[in-house]
Structures are given as structure tokens and as C-alpha cells.
Length: 280
Image (cartoon, rainbow, N blue to C red):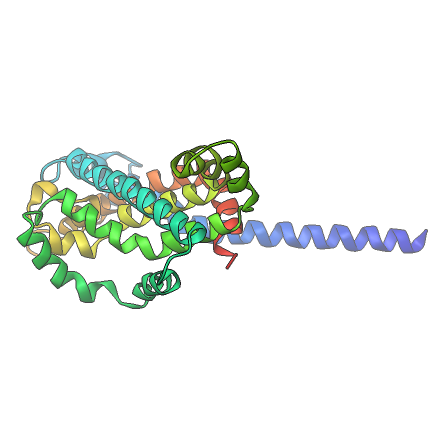
């Protein structure tokens, strides 16, 4: 009886410690976001005469340059094109490498992974020249093509391992039923690797949404700036004057879509990593 009581006490202490640690870590991670939200609402009224919170920062942010909606629309367009291109290419390539035997298969896969070792800012100049010759410099489509290329090594790794985790009996059963390769991929295998596809799409969106260096170097037309580049231009200010309040408002606007997507897709994200990244 006494031993069981001591065991229950140890369990309660352990649960309390885990809960306390979790709450402390959550506060630690949320504190910068909460501070950014508060600062975005702390306009001149709050910082000057202490009259309280206001929306002046957001008003200045939405009226900056071409208008905030233009920059957000550019970021959304580039991110969606990057997500679609990355998912299509990585699914087809991952399926081919995982399911078919052809000369150089492993070399192709390892070569793609080796690209991750190359710091991508070092290849931006050659990419700039290629886009210029193709007539895609200063184009959102050209920028999306570059971002798709940046996403492919990790995405191919994820999709190849996700397909490897699916038993080959699925393919054999589909073949017995008369399904060809496209039908097997679309109707049988793709539903089984959906968490991996969502993980790839989520990473592609977050990385392209937050990408700064590539849009800064490849897009010089102010009307085609993405949101991070527009915020950097705002940070430069006029004659060294930096509008920190409007910048904090931009940080909040930039972070909200990422947070919503992560909350909605977190279960698939974890399952995708379990079936893809942890295998192989």
C-alpha cells in the first residue's frame, strides 16, 4: 500500500515537472511573438504620451511603397508556384528512384543530396545570368523556378523515403488489378504518402515565404518585391530613419500565415517526418 502511494506521488511529481517545463518552454518561444504583436500596436500615442495602443503602425505599413497588398500578393504567388513545382517534381522523382531500377539511380540520388552542401548564395550569380538569358530576370516565375531548385534536395529525400516506407505489395496488387504506373502512383501510392507530401509542401511554402536573399538579388523591380524584401526596404528608411513600429507590424503580418499553416498541418507534418525523414 505504501509502495503504491509512493509510486503515485512520483508519477504526480514527474507529470507536474513535465507540465511546468512545457509551459516554461512555450512562454520562452511565444514571448518574442507576443512582444512583436504588442510593439506593432504601440504607436506614437503609446510610446509618446502613453495614451495607449493604436493601429497607426499598420496604417503606415499598408500605405508603404506599392501598398502592402501588392507585396503580400507577390509572396503568395511565388510561394504557391514553389509549392506546386516542388511537390510535382519531388513526387515524380522520389517515386522513380524508390520504385524503379535504372543505371545511376543511387548516384543521381546522392548527387541531388550533395547539392545541400553547397551554400546557395554562391550560385545566385550564375542563376542570375541564366534567368537573364532566358528572359525571366525580374520575373516572379523565374524566382519561383530558382526557389523550386533550392527545395528539391530535401524534398526528394523526403519523398524517396516516404515511397520506400510503403510495402511493395501495394504495387503488385495494383498490377494484378490491371493498373499501370500512372494509376498506381495516383490511386494507390499517393494516398499512402500524403503526410510526406504535406511535409514537403509545408517546408516549401515556409522557406519560399521567408526567403530574402534570392528575391533581393533576382528581382529589382519594386512592384515585384516579395514581403521580406519590402520590409527590408522599409527598414532602410529615409536618411537613416527607421520606422520600427511599421516594421514590427510587418513581422506580424509575415508570421501569421506561417503560424496558421503550421497549426492546421502539424499532425501531417509529424507523420510525414516519421515516415520519411527518419527512414533511410
